Length: 263
Image (cartoon, rainbow, N blue to C red; front, side, top):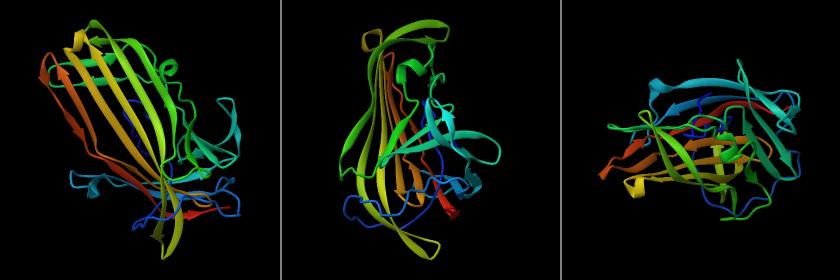
């Protein structure tokens, strides 16, 4: 399955839908949640063009299966098996859904422009401390927001072999966007929409180098059926490198379900 969220690499599991209308904040149904051993989903992934249209050539299909719970990063959680690897884990605490990926922290962060490449020289694991992310809270209300990470620290980047100390600010938050009603497979399902926002600001050389990067991903989640759709929105990185503006735009992508079975 594709990984999105540069530079953190985080989350990508599951499940579907189209057509939505606003409703009230989420109240989970009386039935149990979707985390049960053996439940599985078939998903389709697409890159999106600048108009938000699926790029057919980018299509990939995965079948994701929940394995028996095991201890992972200090928590008993459900592994997600994609047919090749187990890289994602999920668990509920009350009515809050937490996710983790095996590669989501400790990755090297690289920022490349036409004239300069910055590479983070220190491990990110201690900086971001994002082993587990509360991606959904079914007791939360519309516009409720919780902070996952809020860091302001000095780091050293590598600028073409030259150490470049600078100030890095990282803010990661999740917001409840309200209820939606989605249609899929000749049926409909109530889902709750949550938006994960990662905002990064890096400043060095008294402002001669600045980078602002905001990444937003929207999750449409059913308490009983799972994550119905993941939509990584277009990402715009705005930078000033030695006084010259250099911006980069990365189109979004979408993952949605075609079939699923809850055990």
